[in-house]
Structures are given as structure tokens and as C-alpha cells.
Image 1 (tube, helix red, strand yellow):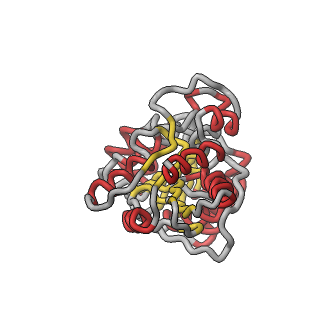
Image 2 (tube, rainbow, N blue to C red):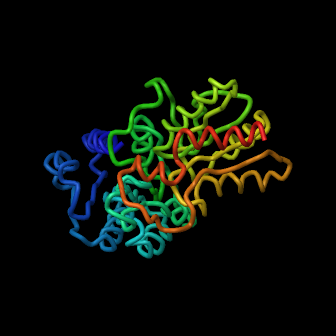
Image 3 (cartoon, one colour):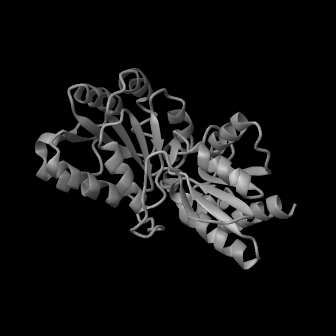
Length: 307
């Protein structure tokens, strides 16, 4: 996803001089081409994320569309007040790009675990929250954010995520993608858990359970219609996210069902408990330790469908 993001942003910057990229003194192996080609559209603000958010807002209010770039929690939690009071309050075109959502930087410990970010960013007024499911969604999300749609939180995987969709797949901000249809259970995924969720659906099919898979790339605004349609057309609903169980995708889906009132369906969520991980390891290891495995998705889905 990281590569898809920077390639797309570089292509956009070729024809749009209003696109700017700010970094917090990192990512040079990734952003160097952009910095070399567009020196007037690139600023390294140093290890000063709060200042990065403030500078980005000032540039945005001067007519720019400004992408800030850093890893894990640094471009959002370290500068939460600036994002709230500066970018969001003024509906500024500031796109906060966080590379390494979830356990992408798992080996670096809890300071680098991006596991509460969706919840916190969802709560900010004016903020759009996007967690693409694969590089093709990342490309489309970057193009959408570059249009200047106010403050955006763009949560990316670290690198190497496979393409799940074929290249004919259309993408629209705020509209979920039905990756496959099914009638027994709906699996709703956000972010880099998409491929794992698709594989879980494959395993369920081997046991005769027909699973619908939805990529909920935009968590705010949520595609309520896709959720309610799934609730009416399938027998159960399971959300899957590499994020805290509080305030993330599962919460957003539950809110949609709660507001609809007439949609009663067995639901469950696979997410992280509200506690700091006591484990250190790579992303696959930490996912497995916290129930984000294909096998556990299959197990939870069967519980919902078969009782």
C-alpha cells in the first residue's frame, strides 16, 4: 500500500502544483523521488509532528491539498490537538497518512502499534476515515483525497499487501465494495485484513457456508446501506479489524444497525481487546496471538451460522 500511495501521489503532483507532501524526518527511501521532482511541493518539517499538522493546515488554508506522512501513531496521536483544532475545525484539506496501521510495526512494541487510531479519528468532526483493503483501493483513495475533501485520515498497511481486487474494480468514497456475494453470513473487513477475510470465506465455502465479503474501506462516513442490505439478505454478520474493539469498524457497524432498529441479526466482531499487547513480534505473529487468523474468522462465522 505504501508504494501504491506514493506512486499515485507523485502522478497527481505532476499535473497539480497544489499537491504538497510533508514528512516528519523519515520515509526518505519512499518519498525521495517526490522530493527530488517537486522540491517546491515537499517539506521535511523534522521530528515535529505537531508542527507538521499546523503547517499543513496553514498551507491548506492557502489553497493547497496537503498530505502529511509518517508511521503508525505519529502523524495523528502526537498531533491530535492540532488536527482537531486546526485541520478539522477549519475543514482544511489536510490528509494525514499513517503507514503501518494495526500491528505492522509490531516488533517495535506498543508505542508503534496503531490499534486505536480509527476510533480516535472517527470521533473528530469533519474527519473522513479511510482504511484501504489493498493497493488498488489505496490508489483510488489517494486520488479521492487529493480532490480536496476536507481533513482525511488515510490508514495504510506498511508494505507488500497483495492486490485482492482485479483492476476493473471501481471504488467510490463512502461506498463499500462487495468482494463476493453470499447468503449465509456476511464478513465485513476494513484495511489490510481484507485478504485474510477472503481466505476465510474460501474455507467456509469448503464447509458449505456461503459467505458474503465486504470491504469497508471508508469507515467514516460508513456505508450504512451496504450494512443494512447484508443484514437483510444474510443470516449473520461478522466484522473483522486489526484495531481495538472500541470505536472501530465493529462499533460503526453496530451503530448503523442500532439506528435502523428493525434489523435484528446475530452479530459478532473480531477485534483487539482494549489493552496493550504484551507480545512483541512481527505482524503475522501478533495477528495470530490476538485472534486475527483465518482459522478464528472461520470459527466465529460458524458459531454465528450454526449456533
